[in-house]
Length: 270
Ligand SMILES: Nc1ncnc2c1ncn2[C@@H]1O[C@H](COP(=O)(O)OP(=O)(O)O)[C@@H](O)[C@H]1O
Ligand SMILES: [Mg+2]
Image (cartoon, rainbow, N blue to C red; front, side, top):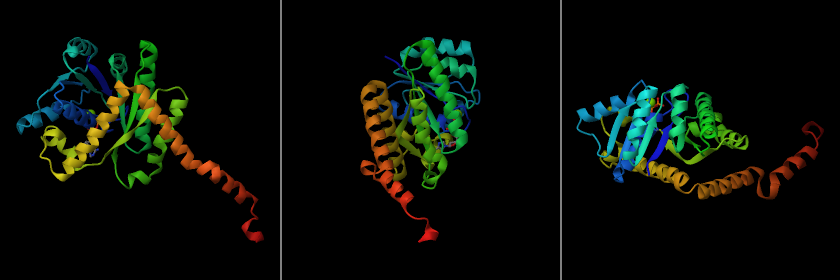
């Protein structure tokens, strides 16, 4: 059966097309046929394709089609079942076409960089995915993927806010889940737009190997959410409980410590 994935974030430059290409390359390598649907009139997939073609780097098993209007999208959906995977690359703004396309997908991936603007774009993605779930009666999950991560980026407030934001959205009823996998900021990912084709056909240098492992991990995690969501939910619950325990300290000792501190005399009285 065809698996349909949409990559959505209501803001431009979130890293959507990059994620589409990374997943497509990995699937193609596993001999899966992949149809990439470019729903973005910016046509970055077209640019990617022609740059790869110019350097004889077109990968096997991947096809690209454009569907930037409702009727083209509907026609595309009719032929999509011939492929193992269909991945929709959507525009970086909240448009009705993206919202209606979500009626036809199994899962949504929303890439976020650690900035508040990106988190807002992901909120939009979660909302339209929630609407699609209500309107179709099917479970369509949103998987949040942190991307373009750097070591300094990891210590920003925006980065730290991503997990609690996803948790709160989940508590508020959204079927939204933070992926453990992250995509680091990597030069190898930038090469995708420079005619290199897919990451998976690039010469296997050390940096490419690291990137490949990262993408394999991401695909494994997405596949688990698609094929065995109960297990994915269980793993998530265990992880969240562990994180909560770490924040509170063993048996809530941090809470005790705070209470003790409150009892302590103010500094100036000592
Ligand atoms: N993980 C990453 N590492 C390095 N560069 C990235 C990464 N993700 C995206 N980029 C770069 O950021 C820019 C925007 O990414 P893109 O995938 O085109 O975003 P979108 O499709 O959401 O507009 C591109 O120049 C791309 O090469
Ligand atoms: Mg794009």
